[in-house]
Each structure stands twice: as structure tokens, then as C-alpha cells.
Length: 116
Image (cartoon, rainbow, N blue to C red; front, side):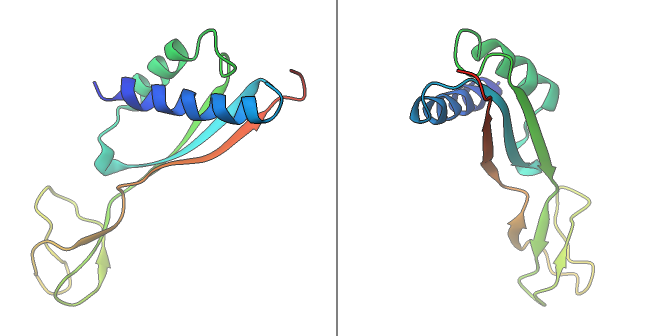
């Protein structure tokens, strides 16, 4: 369950932001997460809540933008969303490609409350 490590890292980064701004409470954390990360949304939310207890992040909302996989074909350079585990370009039939979206794990923003 790699969600534990990810949630812990999110809470640590958000706590750093809190400390840098006078220990203000965190009200929301926004993430951008690609499908290739294979994160289970409900598990991440549950673990985030658990690991944020007794931190400045306790009670904060975790908002995630889930990014689907997009691949650029090595043969014809067209971009496509693969529908199966084996990536085949719908334009030229070339197998594989370069991931252009869907591998993200980005902390987009940390919102702080007006109160300490």
C-alpha cells in the first residue's frame, strides 16, 4: 500500500508550508495524480486523514485531480489515450510510445486558514 508513503509525504510538505507561514492551519491540499501511479483514491483519502492527525494538516480537505494516461506515438508522433495495457497507436499501429500525461504526482497547492 504505497498510499501510506504518499500521504505521509503530502502531510510533511503541507506541514512545511504551515511552519513557513507562522504555523497556520492547513485547510486544503490540492494534488495532481496520474493514473500510472496506481493510487486508490479512497485509500489515499483514508490514509491522509489518519497520518495528518495531530499535525497542522489535521482536518484539511485533500482535493485530487486524477489525470488519465496520454501517450505520444514513437512512429507518427500522434497523441492518444491507450485503452489497454498494451499501447498501440490508433493512427499507425505502432506499439508503445512516450508518456506525456498520467505519471504525475504533483503538489499543486496548500491553502492555509486565516487562523493559527
